[in-house]
Amino acid sequence: MRVWIVFLLCLAGQAFTASITEEEPIIDDVGEEAQPEVGVNPVQVETGDFDEAIDVEEEEEEVTAESPCLNHHCKKGKVCEVDEENTPMCVCQDPTTCPGAVGEFEHVCATDNTTYDSSCHFFAQKCSLEGTKKGHKLHLDYIGPCKFIEACMDAELNEFPLRMRDWLKNVLVTLYERDEENNLLTEKQKLRVRKIYENEKRLQAGEHSLDLLAHDFEKNYNMYIFPVHWQFGQLDQHPVDGFLSHTELAPLRAPLIPMEHCTTRFFEQCDADNDKYIALEEWANCFSIKEQDVDQDLVI
Image (tube, rainbow, N blue to C red; front, side, top):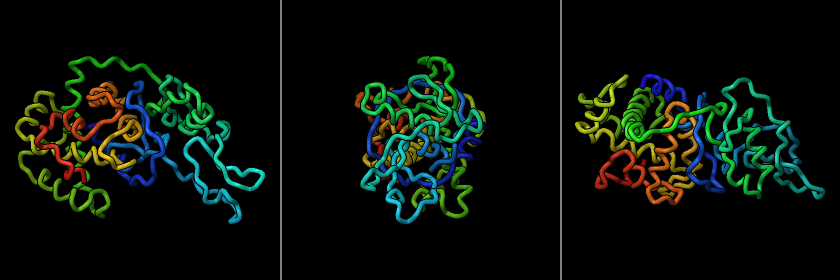
């Protein structure tokens, strides 16, 4: 658990600003080690590396004010060029123009079990396959080079939400403690977290046995209701519709897979009706939140 908390503290950062233009299925392959970048909240990395459907502003280049590409933005894997009539258009990026990887932590693994030097190389390749069956099925799976990850057994799958619930609770408490400039949590979120933070019965962050985590969930159930809703709200961004797509789950899945080999199977199981989306009710059920305690108003 200590490793998880350190990981979380490294990931607090800027909010999502991009918009989704396509959805993707939830089920993907699994992988190994990762060193994620900064993201919107401690449980997710920056969406730019994983969101194949978000139009992201590239670093500003020195272009003349007359350039039609100045304010014409393309999604990952594409760059702006002008045609013979000086009209801007997005075309697939040449992978050879991508910056070289500084280290292994910049490598990414795709669902075809291929390691790419960086997310830039991956999205350029995916763009070149647009319109093909292979391109439709190809997605970025996780951070780091592709490696073997053992299968998730049933008993292990049952243990996953025990750690995840405690993790989410500790994330919120840590954010509350560190939110000196009021930019990590909203006032409404702070009011909810304060009740958890000031509760003397709260299980402190640390290395705990699964039996203790299960016992604490049973004894202090109410402390876990808001953290589960909060994480759903952090992921449900593009669009905010009460459902989590593969794209929205990616920032959470990608850094978790190398640390928790049951991550992919867990999210597959959450999609109880197998419609490729996870509704709030399905999400809450995955964490054993009672049906009567599922409340859309807690997704703040």
